[in-house]
Image (cartoon, helix red, strand yellow):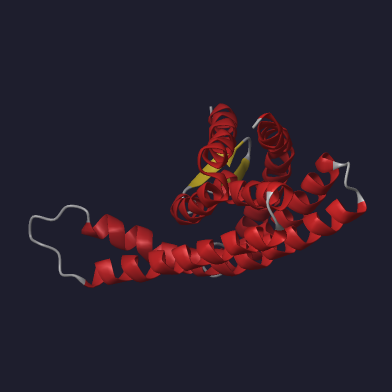
Length: 222
């Protein structure tokens, strides 16, 4: 069932990226990237089994930020794509600050969620820090590679999309899992998570190409 849910997640998430750009242009993509970063840092804490491997959630949400920056590089500008990364980083920092301030409050005797929040946000602060660093590096690298390939191969949208996204997703994935989970999980588990997630990231990256074409087609219709 996880495979089916994963496919549905990809279609829904990437469709929402295209839809928000259609409705609100690049400003919508800025909003999407901020939402995706915050939600991904929460969902990445959940581990699931894919076939006989263990991986974390949040992959599709993080991958959607690459789709968003590729759309901005394709339809707007490299400067706009970088701005989206900066806004997302700020959103992630706000997320860390507010969640940690929330935990400082002494809960009421009637409270029933504080312990769950402590568990989630205690893990989340580390994964968020790791993901923010790798998010910034990998997305900036993706924007650079995408635009360089766009200059060299202006008629090969699929090529620049897949090369930049797959390469940067894989870099982000291995470094993130190491930074986020070292000391929490054993090295073999981290390698298993990273390897499985890398394969998943490649599949997800290939799946985002039709949505990039769809976004570009919608511009031509306007």
